[in-house]
Length: 396
Image (tube, rainbow, N blue to C red; front, side, top):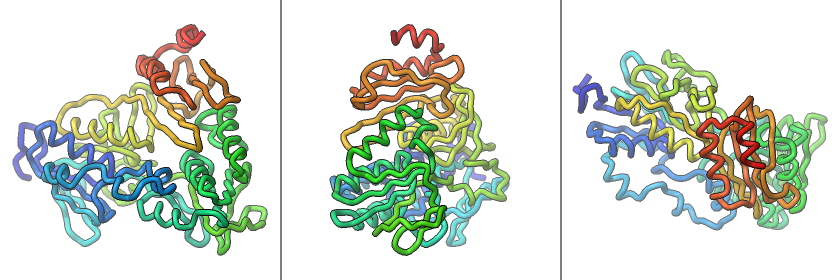
């Protein structure tokens, strides 16, 4: 092993995953003074680009692909990276500290950051559209427009965003969801119904409590045997973390790379972004977050801790969604909540702020149609682990 740049710090750092988390890690390493080799490995042939606009601005045509890169080539050059775009990591030897690429080459490391993200879940049958890469978004965009029918399987945030864009382009949209109320598990039934009604009001054929068995030529087959005809099918039923390449490495994997509160999975190995499951001490629970903001923040945290910072990664997660004229923002950990309380506004007008209780504490806040500054105090209250009784008093 080559000598570290500073006492205890790794010389050769390999980052597997060239998206928001991986790029944030690389930039943080340089910003913190790391002068050794940084190898950035990505399976797509392009430099890091932003993914949230794929289901919004790219799909609608509001943006051209040249607006997606996260950094200019000049900025990337300044990092002095050993960039391996279009290379897939297929294995890691944690004992020898090497990463195996699909071309058979081995990349040695002193420190490893796993930021391989996720891939869409698929349905049985013929291949359907998914939304994860730029190519995915462009391929689906070409199937939208007046006179065409799109079937969207899954009314979560990704499926709902794509359905909203398609409908706005004049596409006939059939939105199928197995749950009785879309997103109820995440935002609560009342708010889930409000979000569902927005699609119905725009002419989307929303079918809840509907289970799809397979994708077939000309549409999709339901569990009852009936056929839903469509020119194109988008499957948006969730994602799987890209961690199969770690099997056999000895690294802990279970619905993501299992990490502690410092984003550490093993000596010299850290996880970041959608592929990482870590213990968030703020909520005292294990979580894996598929949000753009978390990816960047966790990439920075993993890089600092790899260099020896040893700071717990305890964020208040944040996500946003654009659907029609609704701007949805949320902080915290909403899943598994026990109570939802509307603090201001009206559900019927689709302009409100809602707070969430889990156990005895405020754990989340969600707003629709409200200014960003209106929920920032709630973010601070979540970070402070404010008891629910005090929260309700403040909201009264």
